[in-house]
Structures are given as structure tokens and as C-alpha cells.
Length: 502
Image 1: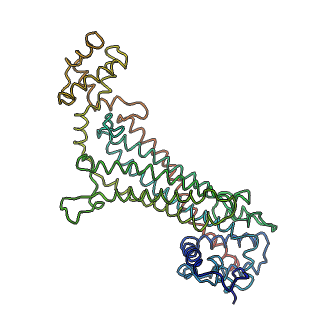
Image 2 (image 1 turned 90 degrees about the vertical axis):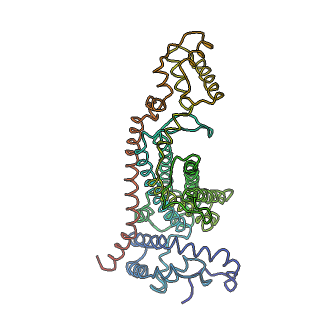
Image 3 (image 1 turned 90 degrees about the horizontal axis):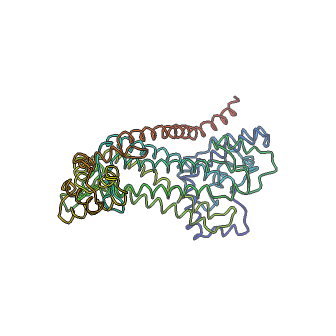
């Protein structure tokens, strides 16, 4: 039986060995790995629609259905490229014709590789987006669980890489999980932009046959159709949106990983990565390298790079069906999401296993000057000073302590009184007890109980609020994954029903 590949005047010389090696064979291999299942689902949905719309006859529909169901997909999945056909689409068409005869050619009535290809790309992308969201939700839960164990764990927060103010480890982790939540919501938005059907657009102008675009969309679990047929085969913003979100998500999470790596150093000594996630040195017996975090950082950079490649390949391309946004570009997008998803899973486990040196973090906070913002605030309250006056007084006191080599515990009531007298020219109202409380990191944290602050009560509230919001996203994630996983089962049930007369 002859090939169903497109006839060409140059058929005897197509393809050239170089073109096949560089373009066609890699594209074929990518397609059989990622696009074969979506291609078969599209074939089944299109066939069901053609029969329901009475565009093909009952006998044709049954014969094509038998061929589609009996196609050896696993053999195709392990097949190798042959120059006999141009791509996987024509290979599948060729195999269907062998099984069902010439009538299987009517499976291509009212469609094109253009609208098929975009639908398949979107089906692969939506699955990778939904998987990434599910894994990101797992990481979010690990972060929340970790934070709930460290609501009272004092630590020093840094600005410009320098000690700033006391906070808690939970307060910091809540900031990370809030950022992750926004990334997950952006991924959900990208999913919504992706999960729209191009089928029925055909080459770019739809078809003269009375097809139902809505029916194929429904059968394939798309939420809607892309209304304009030219847009359906030309628009690549669904890919650009996903790539942009991946870049943001990778950058945001990478910043947190960088902090964790710093905190693992002996000099900082704040956290310890569990044994299953560290490696030893081949020469230095003492080494305990937290390489799981290093791999997470480098993989996130890789995800960002692949996503940036997607946007780069889209740049300055014509607004139309064109290969720049297809076979060559799509694998970068898939890989970026797969990498992001894998890092979400890895970090979920690493975070769950972390141990924290709470005593060291507390001691560091108690011996630092990170609390003196509260001392300045206290002087405003007790002495009636402007904050700028108070700031000047406390700044002078800190300089004196540093120059004399003393920690914050070396600050005396007499020191404060002398500074206030010198600058404000008035006796000190502040009591010794209030002074001790003003430089306490525990007090600093507890009185910062307004929304977004580090007080235990407020962090409890923030975690509860996160839980409620993320429960909704988790419910959406479960429903979405279930809906996507049932597509093939539903399509096969319809086609088998035809053949069984039910």
C-alpha cells in the first residue's frame, strides 16, 4: 500500500539526509513521546463529531472507529523515523489506512494539521501545568506545616544582606508560601488560557462542512473554543503566558533556595538538611554537602532558561501558522514545566526534613542590635519625642556600644538618660523595666500583631487563611486532573459502544 504522505514533485529526493537528521527525525521522536496520545484522542473526538453531525456515513464511522481502536499505539511509541512519511501524523494516517482501508482518509474531513497540532500542544501543556500545580501545592503544604512548627522560633531578618529586625522563622516561611501561592495562581491562569480548543479552525478559515467545534472541545475536556479560526492556529500567547509564569516561579523559588543554602553553612548554622538529601566529599571526611538544595537552585535556573527560550523563539515571528512556535519550540516549554514540577517535589521533601537550631537563632537575636527600632519607638511613646529625634538618640547609643565592643545587653538606663538629655534636653521618663522590654526580641515580635506581622497570633491567622485559600486550589487541582485523566476512557467508551451496537 502506498504512503499517504503528501505528493511532491521532488518526492524522489525528499527529504534530504541532512534535513531528516536535523529536523524531521528529532521532531518525530518528540512527537511519538509527547504527542501520540493527544493525537489519538483528537482523532477519536473528531471522528465522534463527524458521525454525530452526519458528515460521514455510519459504515465509514464504524470502520474508522475499528481502525482507530485497533491501532498499535505502543508500537508507534517505540517506532523509529522513516523517510517514507513526513511526520508522525502521516505515519498514523498510513497505519490507519492499512487497518481500515481508503475510507479512513475521511477522518481528515474538515480539519488540518494546523488546528490538530495546536490542540495537541495545548493538551500536552495543560497536563504539565496541572501536574506542576499539584506538586506546587504539595510544596506549599510542606511550607505551612514547617511554619506551624516554628511560630515561636526567633530569628534575625536581613535587609540588604545585613541584620535588620527580629522576626520568626514562621513569619519568613509565610512570606515564601505567599509568594508560592501567587505563582500557583498564575499557573492556574495560564492553564485557563491554554485549555481552549483550536479544533475546527482547520487551516485557518474553518470549514464548509457543518462541524461542531463545541462538541470536540467538550469531548477533549477543553473549557472553550478559540473563537477566531485565524487566531486559533496563529496565536501563541498561551505558550508565552505559561513560559512567563514559569520564569517568575523559578526566579521566586530560587531566591528562597539561596537563603536555605546560606543558612546551612557552619558560619550561619541555622538549619540542617536531613541525611537523605546531602552528599559527602571524596577527600574531606567532615563534609556534609546540602547538594539537594544546590541541584534545586540549578534546576530552577534551567527551567527559567528553557522558558526564556520559548519567548525568544516567538519574538519577531509572523502572526500566522509557522513552525517557529511549533515542533522546535514546544519541547522547551514542556521541559521548563517538567523541571519546575520536579523541583517542587524535591523541595517539598527537603523542607519536610529540615531541622532548625532554634537556640542558636534565638541567642543571635538576643545579642544583636536588631531590636533597637522598638527602642526608638518606645522613646517616642514615653518621652514625647519625634521619631527622627528618637532615631538619632538610638543611633548614637548603638555607635557607642559598637565602639566599646559591647552587645545590646550592655546598654544601661544611664546611657539612655544621658543621650536623651544631650539631644532632647529633658529627663528620662522611661523605666528600667520598660527599657529591658524594649530591647527584647520576644517583645519586639509579640507586639507586632497587626495584619502581616510576626506575632504568634497573627502568624496563626495567616496560616489559617492560607489553608482556606489553598484548599480551594487543591480542590480545583483534583477535579482538573480527574477530568483530564478521564478523556481517553470516555472517548473509548463511545467508540466501543458504536462497535458493540450500544
